[in-house]
Structures are given as structure tokens and as C-alpha cells.
Image 1 (cartoon, rainbow, N blue to C red):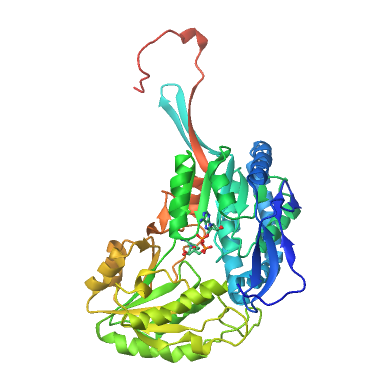
Image 2: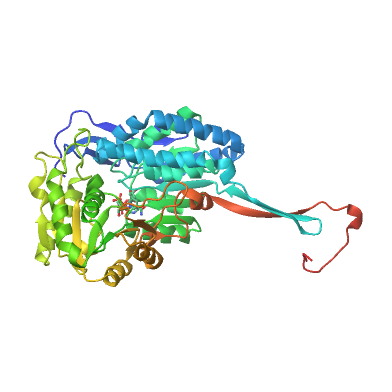
Amino acid sequence: MNAAVTTERKTIGHWIGGEAVRGTSGRSGPVYNPATGEQTGEVDFATVEEIDRAVATAKAAASEWRTWSLSKRADLFFRIYQLVDDRRDDLARALTAEHGKVLSDAHGEVQRGIEVIEYVCGIPTLLKGGFSEQAATGIDVYSIRQPLGVVAGITPFNFPVMVPMWMWAPAIACGNAFILKPSEKDPSASLLTAEILKEAGLPDGVFNVIQGDKVAVDRLLENPDIAAISFVGSTPIARYVYENGTKQGKRVQALGGAKNHMVVLPDADIDMAADAAVSAGYGSAGERCMAISVVVVVGEAADALVSAIEERLPSVKVGDGMDPSSEMGPLVTREHRDKVASYLDSGPEQGAKLVADGRETSPNGNGFFLGASLLDNVTPEMDAYRDEIFGPVLSVVRVDSYNEALNLVNENPYGNGVAIFTRDGGVARQFQFEVNVGMVGVNVPIPVPVAYYSFGGWKSSLFGDRHIYGPEGIDFYTRTKAVTSRWPDPKTSRVDLGFPQTR
Ligand code: NAD
């Protein structure tokens, strides 16, 4: 990669046992400011021994941590909530500096993460079990939730604060110790998070950060002291993590990639649909797993909708994420920017119409920018439709009927998010009933569930049987134990070889 020369590059290490530690492997990766193309840091890649040390530290901390009373844990999470709230600008700036998304969007990311912390402040209620008095004569049965021990989270580059919060907040609140392996592309925010958690009073060793690449991930999958793994990233790696983690007997939830459709019916308000398509297609430069990637427009609405989207694109201000006037920042790396831009060649070569070419509107300089781009007349066999893209290239697929739109969505291998735009409540309800996608928006283009529901896609967008955060997050990070108890008078005791009866 051709980065500009830099003067001061920071070194980014691990966080083990409540303190920052430098890596010892001698292996590292570059971290860039995507808005300038400058390499700003170097992140250490962990060795197997460093990971094992972090896991041993977490294991030792976990046994003490799970003894904390629920009220004490809740108090701590209120302090964490307060400190994260106080430091939200620091977190947002740390992530914009390495990810590139605009600061307002980074603030939005931090906010949605804070809401997961807010949810787990109610951990005493969330961990309530069930109790059945007199399940049999003189016998009570109750279920309790217990932590798993040491759990790990492996996270993607596109939400370096929020996605880790989806994991560590419920995992720790449930009484587990946590090892975070963030993306090597934007690792700094995880260390800031570690400092905040320490300042809030979280015992050392309960939250650890291991920086690294495949070596780190593979060791996390193998280390027998890790009970569960949460993964968020691309589908091939999600499948790999799921298959290998479960093979080692671990509980795994692995969220993968996406290809999110926005279906626009002929009765939809065209201006509203165009606003939504532009917001959800180009927000965060399309680097969201819930970004709209394909607009599926039904019938005669197509020409008007494509014109309305096209009209809006010149006013999307592309620039450095730290500039408050920017609405869309750069892509995360030069390679990714070039890969995304390649669809502007392959699309027209395969028969699509290039309506807006972001290469012409990218800011000059060394940053990894690509302006808002639009392809029309995309068909399902084209690469622009088949691939995730994960950038500011929006495709329009024209179909003749609602059923054709539904089949297109249902036949897609991904099933993360989908939206329908219509004024017909009956059709919207029918769509919600029959679409094979995990998160559905009705006139809402990015239907990320609020923190007290759970987030997760279907098909190749999620491997495992538990969605992330919300009630399913609490399920994922705990295991239940059923206790059957009686306090009989010893005088009534006798030998009985029959199977225990309830009647
Ligand atoms: P990625 O799969 O390249 O990386 C995710 C994590 O896996 C990182 O920590 C990375 O270090 C690690 N990793 C990468 N290659 C590996 C390998 N060969 N072996 C083991 N570990 C490896 O994903 P990314 O590019 O960082 O993030 C973008 C992807 O994440 C997109 O596909 C996006 O849709 C997806 N994503 C999904 C969700 C969701 O909720 N479903 C949310 C955010 C992002």
C-alpha cells in the first residue's frame, strides 16, 4: 500500500489484566487515517502465548467476578454508563480517526452502543430465573442462570465501538470475563474502552483486549478455557469461526455479511423512498451491515425513483470525517476503496447503467474516498448484485410485481435486513409474514432493533441459534441450571427404586 510518509506513528498494543502491554511477536499491521491515506499507527499482532496469558488472566478474574452481587454489578454498570456517556466524544473521535466515518455518524454508533449498556444496567431483572413451588409434594423446582466463564468477542472494522459493546456489556454483566479481539484496521477505540472500564471500577482481568489477525482468532477458537465466542464480520470468516468453534465444543454466535434490499412498491411516496435510499445506501459510505445495497423497485415507480435518487447525490458532501460539514467519509483502506470502485467498471460491462459515478466526485488527495455511485438496471446474475460490495455503490433492480420482489429477496443467500416502502398496511404485513430475513423495516430503511430486542440476520448472515444483545444476548452468555429441592422430615425417609414421580 502506498501511504504518505508519517512522522509520529503510535503503537497500539494489548490490554491484559487491567493494563496496557506491548506485544512481543514482532508482527504488526498498519493503521491508517483513511481521510488522508497516512499511516498513523502500528498495531501489535498477538502470539499464541499472549492469548493464553490473557485467557488465564481472565479465567482467574472470572471466578471472583461472578461472586459480585447483582446490585453491585448494576451499580458498576451505571458508572460505566456515566463514564462512556462523558467520554462519548473521545470514543467517536478515536473511531473516526481510524475508520473514517463522519463524526456525527461515529456519535450515532456510540449512542447505539450506550443503549446496550443501559439495557444491562437492569441485570438483576434480566437474570431472574423461574420458581415452581410444590412441583411435587414437598418439592420445589427452580432455574438459575449462571455465567459461562471466559468468553471472547471478535469484531469487524465497521463498528469499532458499538459491536464490541453489543458483546462485552451483556457478557460481563452476566458474570463472565471477556476477551476482545478487535479489527486490526481500527484497534484504538478498544483500548480507550478498556481504560474507561478500569476507571469505572471493573476488576482487572474481567475485560481484556488482544490485538491480532488470524493467529489470534485461531487460538481463541482452540483455547479450551474459552467457553463461548461471539463473532461479527464477513460471511466466510463467520462460517469458519462457527464451524471451528463449535468443533471445539464452544458456544458460538457468528454474524456474517449482508445484501440488504429495499423494496419500493408503486404506491410508495417517491420522495420519501428516495431520501431513505440515499440515507441508508450512502450513510457511513455504505460500510454498514444494515446499509441498503439494492433498491428493488416495482412497476411504474422505477423511472421517477431513479431520477429522485440521482438528483440527491450531488448534494451528498464527501470529505474528512472530522470536518463537521462532511456527510460521507472515506472507505477504510485503499484496497477496499479500489475493490468497491471496480463495480463501476464491472457493472456497465455486465449490462448495468452507470447513473452516478463516484470516482468523478471523490475529493482529491491521498484519502480513500469514493463518491456516491448509482447503478440502474442491475440484474441478479451481475457481480454488483451478487457481491456484498460494502461501499457507496447502490444498485437498482427493476421488477414487475410484488411477488417478483419477494422472491428476489428470499432467494438471496443473505438475510440480514430488508425494508419495504409502501402506503398499504396489508401488503406490508404480508411482506413481514413471508420474507425470509431476520430484521424487517416497514418504511424504515435501517431496521436495527433497539437494545431490548435482539439483533441478527437469517441464512448466511448468521451462524448459530442466538441473536446478539437484548434478551438473546443474555441467553447466549448464561447457562441455566434447574434445581429440584426438598426439605423432608428425615423420619419419612425410605428407599424407593422407582423413577421419581410428581403425582
Ligand atoms: P472480516 O470478516 O474481514 O473481519 C472480522 C474479524 O475477523 C476481524 O477481527 C478480523 O481480524 C478477523 N479475520 C479476518 N480474516 C480472518 C481469517 N482469515 N481468519 C480468522 N479471522 C479473520 O470483516 P470486516 O471486513 O472487518 O467487516 C466487514 C464485514 O462484517 C462485512 O461483511 C459486514 O457485513 C460484516 N458485518 C456484519 C454485521 C452483522 O451484524 N451481521 C455487523 C457488522 C459487520
